[in-house]
Image (cartoon, rainbow, N blue to C red; front, side):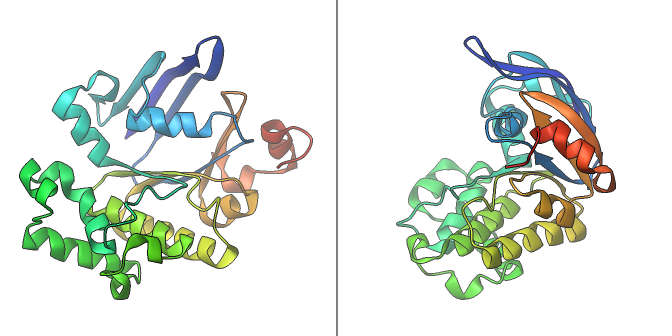
Length: 246
């Protein structure tokens, strides 16, 4: 279980997130919604420890995540895999090698520097690509792919980290409808088949209703809604977005 207690983050005089407390059970698929700048990305980056909290506590299965440093922090980032809006692939590398980058924390440095990946890791990467219908593209350069294909490679990279939690930060914000469906279907399949907890920042309420079982709504850095998707009525939407959603 992931627990968040009184979590906050300030950037100078600006409070990006304040006094957030949540409990997230293993295997949940949660949509995090709110206006641009509401604090959604800040929340996920705090959970992955890409940025440091100004206040509060994060624990996972009774481990203090906020206290982790060095190798323990590197291991946490492996377990809490991030998927970014802009994919974060290395254009000049093949699709297969981009997926294998997800194994960096598990192999000696010389192997990652020389791209001398163990055969078992290569097999793991091919299996991940196969799950995402991307095996045929394994030897292509990443910059030869469409946006939706690149995002599925990024999901495969997250899978080979052997995570316990997936943090997807606006994973479909820059994609066309068909690619959006493929990416969201992939995340839903991983959640269902692997039992992985998924927290997914989403810009569109329709996607949240279609794919998520629980919704967390953030407004001006505060959690103003937390409940099952069925409870996301017009009043809740007004509370999260104001008069009209974006």
